[in-house]
Length: 204
Ligand code: AMP
Ligand code: MG
Image (cartoon, helix red, strand yellow):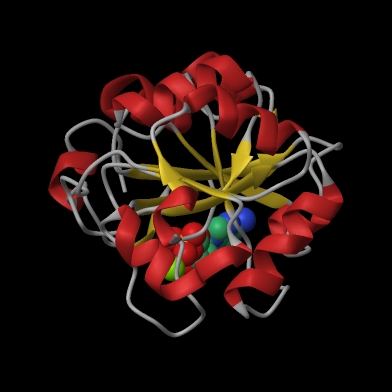
């Protein structure tokens, strides 16, 4: 039965993540393929499941601005302003990474991308897990990003240990990525938060 892999058991998802497994993560943008960002073996499984080149950096999902700060060696004011204004929401900030952030997560970069997803089940999971989840979109490399739990199963099958069903994604579009590691922030990828929204609170 395919549906055994899909469900709404947050405690089961937490246990799988602690044991180094992969969980389909509902967010407001698209479904993510999540692993404990502090376990090298777990993060490595993401690349195998997606068939993704392993020098592609992943976004770390956290539960709050406070939780985001500790992934960074230097938390810039632009990240603080964007985080307090738009999190939880479809915006990722790139900042200088803390020394212990795995190279498997950053793709060898000295920076790391972080966001707080705007989805009640994702936030519940992050709060119970109390750590960071590395999560790219839950599709095989080159395929369309999934916006339902069933899409995740159809594309990745049993290479995902469990898929948390949070319903269809409200935004259905990737997060906007802003590089805050530079003196003047730069939008690296357009997405769910517009450049106009960003310009309302930081100078680009
Ligand atoms: P996805 O998780 O599939 O939405 O893709 C992650 C996106 O975040 C990719 O487009 C990456 O290039 C970008 N990204 C993640 N980390 C960094 C970083 N440290 N510097 C620049 N871009 C990043
Ligand atoms: Mg993707």
